Image 1 (tube, one colour):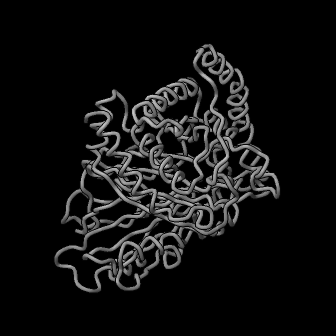
Image 2 (cartoon, helix red, strand yellow):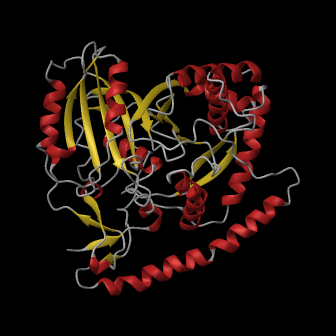
Length: 472
């Protein structure tokens, strides 16, 4: 059976995975039922999807380390995907509030994906109040990153309310008409290795990886020396906090959205970016949340901010994959003034982007993995108390579809991302834009972080604070 070697930038997401640290990302989508929908509309949709036919390659991949590939991580394609296993129907208990929905998603997101099958699940959830239903999808991070996931969603749904929508996993020979969120030829995950011919594919693969890694040290060294020449720059050192503890396998999830135009108005007023304002909102929210718990460190919290390398390197990932670098950002949480905090964040992000300039996607991925290396010690008994965290949390901002999308006539009204808490990193904050809204998803360890929903209140207060200070 042919198999494909998994690129290092994707395979690294298998290495830290455990029961307490499943490495999948997800999306919670909330839809309004069509006006003419009957009581069995969601169940009928589920039945049609389970009975659908062909499955595209991305949704047939499962990982393996066969002898014929010399133990390298490789993709094997399942010939027959058991859709009855991957596509599931659930119903919320009454009264079917958002609270019940988030409790269900919290449980689902804490369960690892079976590596013996293709690495995805889709859950249709009926019974949400207000004539709505939900769709929760999770995919292993080795399959794709947030940007590729948003493109996948943009292609899977329709911008025509009366158009039939094929299942997410159905093959697509071309992008959806009128879509600006994704296009391109099939993604090639790596050198193909035919059965009995593993050694033939290895020299090329190893030579490519070796040349990238040989150039990693001097490339990073040049950027580091250039950065150190700035007299005002000191590398951020993350303080200990309640965010930085070993985690369990249980999750707590909270989500809410704000009008994107409010955030853009602040960004225009301070000559910054939407991402700068997102980080400043999170800084304000963490300052208030930890302050309420009397757990705010005196030193500033530090966030890891993933940065997409796709546009910079022209990477085509229409069939998945990862092209992500990472920046360490000073959140200035010890500063009371919101505009001063925002200014510190902007300066820190600017220096981080300069550090990534000139690195290839593989080099940037290895650089990011090196920043994660101290987290491995947090999983070892006794070391979490003595090893300082390299950063305090991960904050991501993923651009999503700008137009209104539909699923068989059901309008998508909310798009909330879910991500990966790590050992020593009990909270992950991810924002995704959709149709004029910026929707935040907070994924946290259930035991480590009490009253996680309070962070949503503080995010809203942080945005209002920035609007008042910036005069937007």
